[in-house]
Image 1 (tube, rainbow, N blue to C red):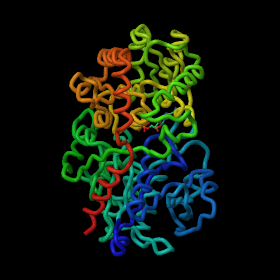
Image 2: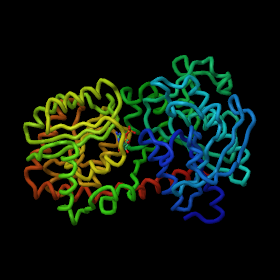
Image 3: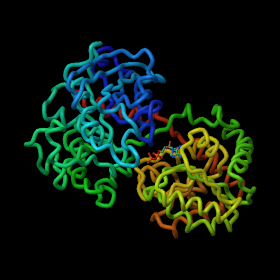
Image 4: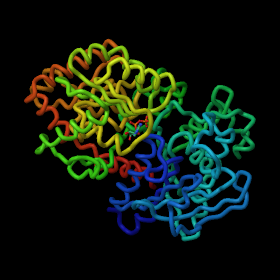
Length: 485
Ligand code: ADP
């Protein structure tokens, strides 16, 4: 808890492009929604600022205007404040930027052409709120920006400083860097003299992520291992030098999951079970096999719930399937993404009828049924800043088989003989991310599955892992405290 005097300093404005439960395209939204709730429980006064994309204001009934501007990147705008699911939400209502066809970032498969300006506007308004406050008197002491969409918030606050406001930027995925042509400096309301290699400039362009990384008071990313990886070329994706130069300000803080939503004992979408009543998981397994048209198999039922992209190593699946199926395994896949990978998954299902089932699409409820019914969840990512699905797997006794990278390496204890002997093992990790190592990991999975007493002891250990926000929100709180003078 913070005391009354600290409360004024304990005001944090999160700036992000998506937030559960209003809008989600990936793990970013889960984190942006969960973190304020966890920190609010510790006495922090948290608000989240995000764009009012088409239809979102209707999900914030009774919202009141707390800020307005006449020229917000080409039109008038208001900030509407309301509560949703225990989160104090601020929606930036700027119809000229956000009330349009398509998703938050793309329309008909292409980026909205004015994405740099759309998210710069969000950051610019965040900076105005930090400067002058809202009409209800609320003004943050810390502005916490997320990913490239939030990157310009620390930048605006550095170029025109507000002395009592500190800034944090969190990297959820460095693959997205907010690159815009240098000619957009004016439309992004950025000072031309900041266009140099130590500031906004990035290989001749502007990068809003880089802008955030060089100007924020602190940088966080979503796992300790990813924090180290980001300083290396393959993972840093061009920004490794920028991050390494600020290493003393870089913190790797593991994401948590919402343990109320992901609670196998109380999940209304499944037949409930716990580590003590593991036998009840079987009903979920049977239902899942039926739902995907799979035969009952002697080996483990594995699942994948994922964006279907190269990052996630989905292209490795066809290469490991023959052996896995021969060893008695079955696979259910839920995901969408690259057309080629979607088609590869459909081909796999056609090739192994009754052993591989595929749903192309996004289906939150089905994903719950999958974790509840699965014996294992596969996450063969090439890089994974944190990853959430391996943590759902731990919680639901679906043992994670994961590439040893980023947050996957930080959350899964591999079942080597020593970890099995001490009872510490919670899943299987493999390295490098290739079909050979992945195939070996699946063989190991099948071996352990064949020894049911051993399997169940690993399952129980997995289900005991603390995957909630308790530890991580304390780490964020300590970081915020350290920034406050
Ligand atoms: P990323 O953010 O890189 O996509 P994460 O593992 O951090 O990966 O988060 C992905 C989130 O999206 C998880 O909550 C996962 O369950 C969910 N998800 C991904 N694809 C689907 C899908 N097709 N249907 C339902 N949920 C999905």
